[in-house]
Length: 249
Image (cartoon, rainbow, N blue to C red; front, side, top):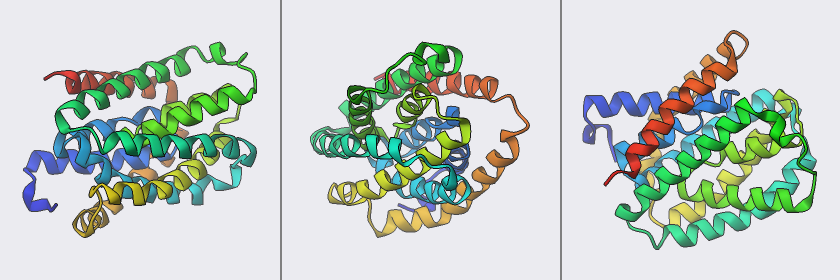
């Protein structure tokens, strides 16, 4: 994997996708699936998961440094165990799917998560009465683990859970930052065992890391200046259209 393999349009898309990672980690959760769609289009649905993962970890480290003091460890622990089991299940599935079958799966996952994210934004009261029951964290944690291994797209699931337990905004971001940093590091050997991460992809990641930092800086600057619900809604609509395109043959 190198820049020479990409067209100018693909280079632009990849850089924008890396900036989107930083945005998503700074609190604009509606951006959280755009980079998944972009990288799947440019590199293929399966290959893109390994290219994305180290960049997501870069964003997670930055998010922990900025918001980590707000982490709520109790909710972190409730999600982590079932999510780790979900990663193993997702790894097993990933090793048995080819590109033609995997691409629509990624599209379906992203489209479903777009719907969940839209409900979370526009009807948050629907989740206010969800009990703090063990079954709820087990179910969403397991689903988050499978989804993050298959498509690096578990952000809306985790946000849905943390919203349901009524975490304030920055506690939600801080808890999510530690959760995804831990989970994404846990995923590294599984992705490497499938041949999705190697020296060349890591060197490619290193050149894109500054774009993640730029996205984080832009997100921090905008988070206090833009109506987040409107911003997330527009980006969700764009992401949903892109996800529908992944479902086409």
